[in-house]
Length: 186
Image (cartoon, rainbow, N blue to C red; front, side):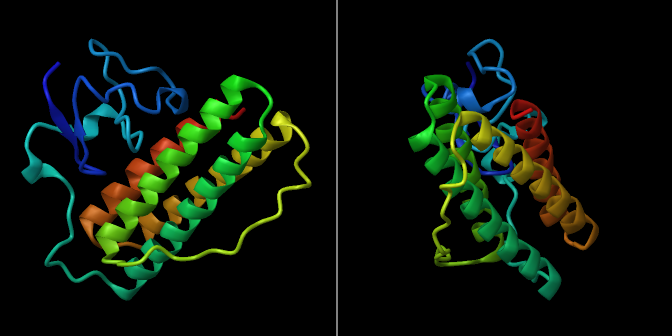
Protein backbone atom coordinates (compact mmCIF):
# COMPACT_ATOMS: atom_id res chain seq x y z
CA UNK A 1 0.00 0.00 0.00
CA UNK A 2 1.33 3.39 -0.99
CA UNK A 3 1.20 6.11 1.68
CA UNK A 4 -1.06 9.05 0.87
CA UNK A 5 -2.98 11.87 2.46
CA UNK A 6 -6.56 13.02 2.74
CA UNK A 7 -6.95 16.51 1.24
CA UNK A 8 -9.88 17.20 3.56
CA UNK A 9 -8.56 16.30 7.04
CA UNK A 10 -4.86 16.21 6.19
CA UNK A 11 -4.23 12.84 7.80
CA UNK A 12 -1.67 10.41 6.42
CA UNK A 13 -3.24 7.15 5.27
CA UNK A 14 -1.08 4.03 5.38
CA UNK A 15 -1.00 0.28 6.06
CA UNK A 16 -1.21 0.86 9.83
CA UNK A 17 -4.39 2.94 9.88
CA UNK A 18 -6.46 2.26 6.75
CA UNK A 19 -9.03 0.22 8.72
CA UNK A 20 -9.65 2.73 11.53
CA UNK A 21 -13.37 3.54 11.80
CA UNK A 22 -14.32 0.82 9.28
CA UNK A 23 -17.61 0.35 11.16
CA UNK A 24 -18.60 3.90 10.22
CA UNK A 25 -17.87 3.58 6.51
CA UNK A 26 -20.34 2.41 3.85
CA UNK A 27 -17.83 -0.24 2.73
CA UNK A 28 -14.83 -1.44 4.70
CA UNK A 29 -11.39 -0.31 3.62
CA UNK A 30 -8.72 -2.89 2.92
CA UNK A 31 -5.13 -2.52 1.74
CA UNK A 32 -6.21 -3.49 -1.77
CA UNK A 33 -9.53 -1.64 -1.69
CA UNK A 34 -9.14 1.80 -0.08
CA UNK A 35 -12.33 3.81 -0.69
CA UNK A 36 -12.59 6.25 2.22
CA UNK A 37 -10.38 8.25 4.50
CA UNK A 38 -10.31 6.21 7.71
CA UNK A 39 -10.32 9.42 9.78
CA UNK A 40 -12.94 11.72 8.23
CA UNK A 41 -14.70 9.38 5.79
CA UNK A 42 -13.90 11.43 2.67
CA UNK A 43 -14.23 9.51 -0.58
CA UNK A 44 -11.03 8.44 -2.32
CA UNK A 45 -11.17 11.22 -4.91
CA UNK A 46 -10.02 13.43 -2.01
CA UNK A 47 -6.79 11.43 -1.59
CA UNK A 48 -3.45 12.88 -2.67
CA UNK A 49 0.18 11.87 -2.62
CA UNK A 50 1.67 15.22 -1.63
CA UNK A 51 1.03 17.19 1.58
CA UNK A 52 0.98 20.38 -0.52
CA UNK A 53 -2.41 19.31 -1.90
CA UNK A 54 -4.10 19.26 1.55
CA UNK A 55 -6.82 21.90 1.82
CA UNK A 56 -5.80 24.95 3.80
CA UNK A 57 -6.96 28.51 4.26
CA UNK A 58 -3.76 29.76 5.89
CA UNK A 59 -3.16 33.29 4.66
CA UNK A 60 -6.67 33.55 3.20
CA UNK A 61 -9.29 35.96 4.53
CA UNK A 62 -12.63 34.21 4.82
CA UNK A 63 -15.87 36.18 4.72
CA UNK A 64 -17.87 36.78 7.88
CA UNK A 65 -20.55 34.46 6.48
CA UNK A 66 -17.99 31.68 5.92
CA UNK A 67 -16.63 32.08 9.46
CA UNK A 68 -20.19 31.91 10.80
CA UNK A 69 -20.88 28.76 8.75
CA UNK A 70 -17.67 27.11 9.99
CA UNK A 71 -18.42 28.09 13.60
CA UNK A 72 -21.88 26.53 13.36
CA UNK A 73 -20.46 23.50 11.54
CA UNK A 74 -17.93 22.99 14.35
CA UNK A 75 -20.71 23.03 16.93
CA UNK A 76 -22.93 20.76 14.82
CA UNK A 77 -20.19 18.15 14.51
CA UNK A 78 -19.26 18.26 18.21
CA UNK A 79 -22.96 18.03 19.10
CA UNK A 80 -23.34 14.98 16.84
CA UNK A 81 -20.07 13.45 18.05
CA UNK A 82 -21.29 13.75 21.64
CA UNK A 83 -24.60 12.16 20.62
CA UNK A 84 -22.83 9.21 19.00
CA UNK A 85 -20.63 8.64 22.04
CA UNK A 86 -23.72 8.54 24.25
CA UNK A 87 -25.41 6.18 21.77
CA UNK A 88 -22.32 3.96 21.86
CA UNK A 89 -22.42 3.79 25.65
CA UNK A 90 -26.13 2.96 25.73
CA UNK A 91 -26.47 0.66 22.70
CA UNK A 92 -27.17 -3.00 23.37
CA UNK A 93 -25.96 -4.62 20.16
CA UNK A 94 -22.17 -4.71 19.83
CA UNK A 95 -22.32 -3.81 16.13
CA UNK A 96 -24.29 -0.66 16.98
CA UNK A 97 -21.90 0.24 19.81
CA UNK A 98 -18.99 0.09 17.34
CA UNK A 99 -20.82 1.95 14.58
CA UNK A 100 -21.89 4.75 16.94
CA UNK A 101 -18.42 5.09 18.49
CA UNK A 102 -16.74 5.29 15.10
CA UNK A 103 -19.35 7.69 13.71
CA UNK A 104 -18.57 9.87 16.73
CA UNK A 105 -14.84 9.69 15.96
CA UNK A 106 -15.52 10.86 12.40
CA UNK A 107 -17.80 13.70 13.55
CA UNK A 108 -15.10 14.94 15.93
CA UNK A 109 -12.56 14.95 13.08
CA UNK A 110 -15.01 17.02 11.03
CA UNK A 111 -15.18 19.54 13.89
CA UNK A 112 -11.37 19.73 14.01
CA UNK A 113 -11.23 20.37 10.25
CA UNK A 114 -13.76 23.21 10.55
CA UNK A 115 -11.79 24.69 13.43
CA UNK A 116 -8.54 24.52 11.46
CA UNK A 117 -10.04 26.13 8.37
CA UNK A 118 -11.77 28.89 10.36
CA UNK A 119 -8.83 29.48 12.69
CA UNK A 120 -10.89 28.55 15.77
CA UNK A 121 -8.38 27.98 18.56
CA UNK A 122 -10.51 26.49 21.34
CA UNK A 123 -13.08 23.75 21.17
CA UNK A 124 -16.50 25.22 21.99
CA UNK A 125 -18.18 23.92 25.14
CA UNK A 126 -21.70 22.75 24.41
CA UNK A 127 -24.41 21.99 26.91
CA UNK A 128 -25.02 18.35 27.68
CA UNK A 129 -28.20 16.92 26.23
CA UNK A 130 -30.49 14.52 28.07
CA UNK A 131 -31.10 11.53 25.80
CA UNK A 132 -33.27 9.61 28.25
CA UNK A 133 -36.17 9.76 25.78
CA UNK A 134 -34.18 7.36 23.56
CA UNK A 135 -34.83 3.90 24.98
CA UNK A 136 -33.15 1.42 22.63
CA UNK A 137 -30.80 0.96 19.69
CA UNK A 138 -33.57 1.62 17.18
CA UNK A 139 -34.39 4.97 18.82
CA UNK A 140 -30.73 6.00 18.58
CA UNK A 141 -30.55 4.90 14.94
CA UNK A 142 -33.66 6.95 14.07
CA UNK A 143 -32.22 9.96 15.88
CA UNK A 144 -28.89 9.49 14.08
CA UNK A 145 -30.68 9.44 10.74
CA UNK A 146 -32.51 12.68 11.58
CA UNK A 147 -29.25 14.34 12.62
CA UNK A 148 -27.45 13.24 9.45
CA UNK A 149 -30.26 14.62 7.28
CA UNK A 150 -30.00 17.92 9.13
CA UNK A 151 -26.21 17.96 8.58
CA UNK A 152 -26.64 17.40 4.83
CA UNK A 153 -29.13 20.27 4.64
CA UNK A 154 -26.82 22.51 6.66
CA UNK A 155 -23.81 21.72 4.47
CA UNK A 156 -25.80 22.25 1.29
CA UNK A 157 -26.76 25.76 2.47
CA UNK A 158 -23.16 26.36 3.51
CA UNK A 159 -21.89 25.54 0.02
CA UNK A 160 -24.38 27.97 -1.51
CA UNK A 161 -23.43 30.76 0.93
CA UNK A 162 -19.63 30.35 0.70
CA UNK A 163 -17.30 32.04 -1.76
CA UNK A 164 -13.97 30.40 -0.93
CA UNK A 165 -13.28 27.30 -3.05
CA UNK A 166 -11.58 25.42 -0.19
CA UNK A 167 -14.51 26.05 2.17
CA UNK A 168 -16.89 24.87 -0.57
CA UNK A 169 -14.85 21.69 -1.21
CA UNK A 170 -14.69 20.77 2.47
CA UNK A 171 -18.42 21.36 2.92
CA UNK A 172 -19.18 19.29 -0.19
CA UNK A 173 -16.95 16.46 1.04
CA UNK A 174 -18.63 16.46 4.45
CA UNK A 175 -22.08 16.64 2.87
CA UNK A 176 -21.23 13.51 0.89
CA UNK A 177 -19.97 11.75 4.03
CA UNK A 178 -23.12 12.67 5.96
CA UNK A 179 -25.17 11.28 3.05
CA UNK A 180 -23.27 8.01 3.52
CA UNK A 181 -24.24 8.13 7.19
CA UNK A 182 -27.90 8.61 6.26
CA UNK A 183 -27.81 5.35 4.27
CA UNK A 184 -26.06 3.57 7.14
CA UNK A 185 -28.77 4.64 9.60
CA UNK A 186 -31.83 3.82 7.48
